[in-house]
Image (cartoon, rainbow, N blue to C red; front, side, top):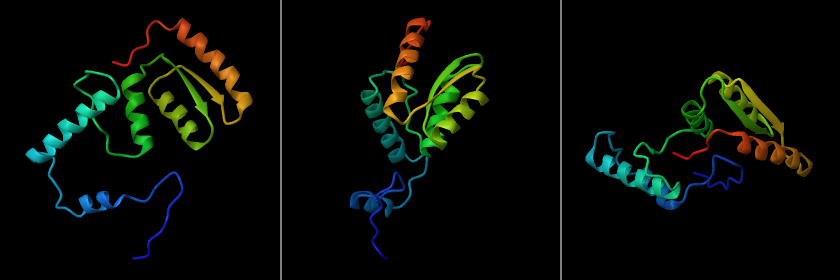
Length: 136
């Protein structure tokens, strides 16, 4: 097989340790070894995100899958979402927020330095006006 060097945002080259792990037999989702790995990974994620929430789980999927999982668990009908858009991914975020029932989708074009001051002012006002902001 030809070895390629991938330098884009993804897919990217895997470390040799990853390739070796992928060559091992697949573990079933109820295998005790898998459950132990899941528990360890979840505990490490709680440490990284400084939370004690027992429902902290890794999500196997694309960035879009992770973003959608976040939005459907965070946004409620009538909420306002502030989204910086600099391409297809940002536009997709707006669409998922709309599908989650967000009434106010404040979409801001970003990508150039002159775009950030108005966005930062808007965010500062939104944080000041917010009823609560939490990571739990």
